[in-house]
Length: 430
Image (tube, rainbow, N blue to C red):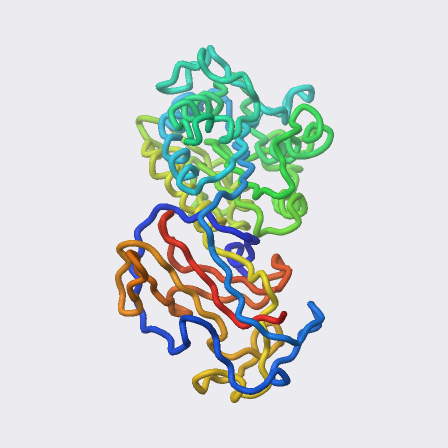
């Protein structure tokens, strides 16, 4: 099961993207599902104790997601120009999260774990940092955790102020250890005693977790051992950190991991001592093998730390967050099952689904309503257009989603705009 298909969302924030609706309309009645047969033709799966059936109407309402976003930033001597590039393009992430109407906690931890008294603590803005790009960090926040809701005093997100504060927070400087231990730093920051001590208030049980690593060297996390001399011996297995993030949230679907790192060593797998990227503007980067192991386990993005076009890197990460956290929802009610094809409308088949229950082949209808939609399945609805979506083309159903109480989720293949609404209509058990 993919990470995307297991996301638990009861209401969705819809990103601001145009959508072209295509595909042939289904034959179901848009005003409701009229099934043949009597109530005995539908059986309860035992989860809600009823055998009645009603048409459930569920809306993907534009609304915010909650996201806790931890940035793990390399603060070694070679990172100043890379921190500048990150800071100078972070406005693109702020814009994307604003379009999702997301409630976001931001925090930064550095890869320097040499001092056990400070390793894993969230960073605060360093006003004297020369790595903060275009920002005057003397005017930035002094908080180690910044939340988007603190920048909505007028009801509208103050993107300028948030961009400045986040840009400064992401530029901790370049005086840190040259033995980067970003995976240890992330785990320490999100573990006891820090997570309920100095780092308290960041991790919210109802929020998604996103972790972004930014480094031009590979991870050397060794759990504090003293015999790791070359960043290859006695390292903590990368899968331990994958397990940590999953266990922390209880489900991989609630976690996104991405990184702006150096590419893997092609033809030299596992060798993190190889320079795999370079540019005149930002210098070199050595293969981020261990970071890539963890990121790839969650299906994340790995744009190059040496590519001066950090706008593309930020956009890639923003799209990853949008696609993972903003296009999937759980069915709120248990879908009704059928026994015979005669229980289904329009001669649909009664087929076994992934939840080991039998459903009509088109038991679910999905509609999108909004301005300027185009397609042969669209009809006027007041001053808007209402379009029926096509399963397999416009949306997919996952009958084995253990992130959902009902075990069933729906994922949109496209990304509607913020002004569009998406509605599910399906026969459910009462």
